[in-house]
Image 1: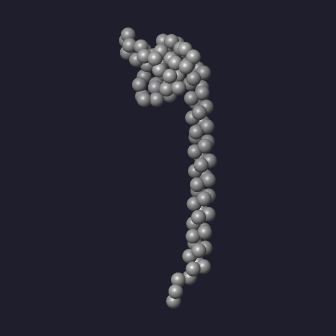
Image 2: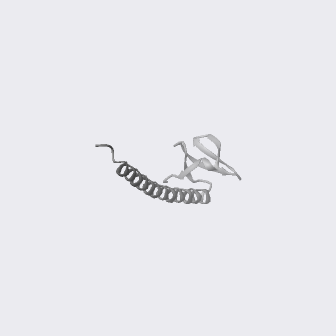
Image 3: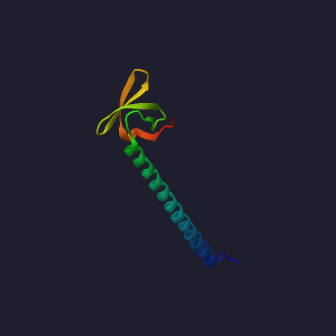
Length: 95
């Protein structure tokens, strides 16, 4: 008794279709999450003002002391002000 190649081929086709459907579902979920995150970051950048407490993408917290076109001056410790890209700001910290 030999291998039934028809059964093997239909099994492979069925698995490929199922994997394709799962891949599409995961890509739609990922795109939705990325859109939500992009909108949240847009809100952070529009609500940014002097005195806001922020968190950098690296997890460092600070307070905004100056805003320029592409950069933000942030006080990370008393008397220590650094200049960062406004796109390095991940979230507004709870006050």
